[in-house]
Image (cartoon, rainbow, N blue to C red; front, side):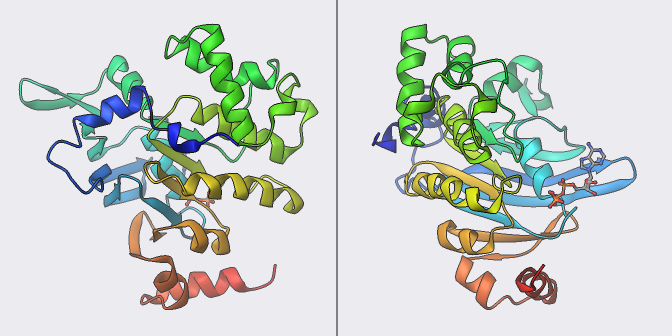
Length: 283
Ligand SMILES: Nc1ncnc2c1ncn2[C@@H]1O[C@H](COP(=O)(O)OP(=O)(O)OP(=O)(O)O)[C@@H](O)[C@H]1O
């Protein structure tokens, strides 16, 4: 098995080094939302959201459908713009650039640089259907990071081993099960060696018998001290197991957050209690 301590080597680790200046704890915020607002038409999806994730922290966002959970991740991946507030990732503004001492909207080059800080795993695996598994993983390291083919292949094989799919490298996505495809998607994101991994309901498109193999891989990653993880999931038992902190979202705000045992077993807020008791009901 590959040692996952290599995940934070390379490009992103360098990008984060400036952040670590003066910090001896290794727990500085690596994601910070300050009063972030996001609207779709007249609907306010994120409402002046303040939110922080510290380096190496494993944070799970739970909450009712439509509460804005996926929007947080999509904004981080620069797939959705924000309407107000500021976000910092690895010490740098995400949607803005500093120019002459003021923050102005970021240009495409800045956004491209910032995207390298993060890897995202989607509900639908989003693999390139016409490429083999290995090629799915080598594309971005070659074209975005400038690795040679040989380097990218070596890296792809390393992460395929990590997700237990070394024997599937030459297959096409359609020849794999959903669980295997999602594990390839995880390997593909890791191959960019991001410091932050975002998971958007990574098991909700899977048949129940395939959920475990994907959760096992994510759980193994959660053991990696330096990797920051932000997950949206409906898998409450899993969230409880792997998270340092659980955030309960409702209507675009954090209603309550804390260690998983406190949020899951002794929630203080009525809305959290109602949500969690609904999750435990059959069906
Ligand atoms: N591109 C979009 N255009 C318009 N409305 C959108 C768009 N994306 C999300 N929304 C709306 O924003 C709200 C929040 O969506 P989001 O996907 O973040 O919720 P969620 O908490 O992740 O929900 P779920 O658990 O159902 O995935 C929802 O009301 C959704 O319909």
